[in-house]
Amino acid sequence: MRTFLDIGKELEADALSPSTMLALGEETLECWITANDQVPTDKEKEGFRLIALHRQGAKGDPSFNACRETCRELIYHYNLITLDPEHDQTLQRLNMMKLVASHLYYFIAGKIEKSDFGEFCCSSRSVRAKLDS
Image 1 (cartoon, rainbow, N blue to C red):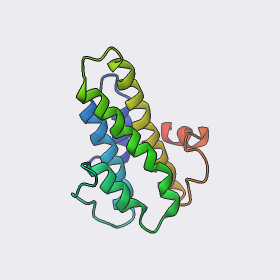
Image 2: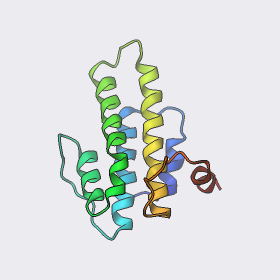
Image 3: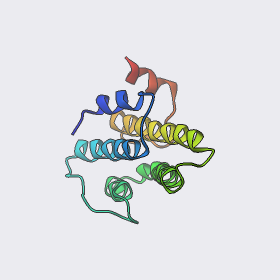
Image 4: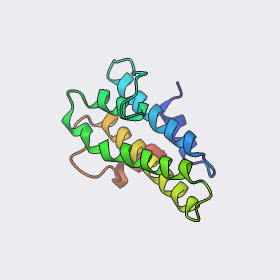
């Protein structure tokens, strides 16, 4: 498993495939789960491991539910792109998927730093500044 910072660095790359971005989302959640002394599940929920990992990470932590829709949106864009890769908006969808994967990463970064994170937006400048240094 990559380090959390390595995941963040890869998310900064220019060209990422939909499967890579989905995998980075999974790895981000794996970091959260292992930071809480658990073993990440290999199971799937609703056809995706990302949803199962989110479910596992949310147990006992209601503030973690703040990223549920982010996980679902990551899958939504993955499905849009993979079901119709020749669509005229594929580039925009790839860009949006990257933004959503980054949003998930910043949320988890905030949760690792401050466990009750989720009460406010995870795009906080202070969180991003600490990760960039």
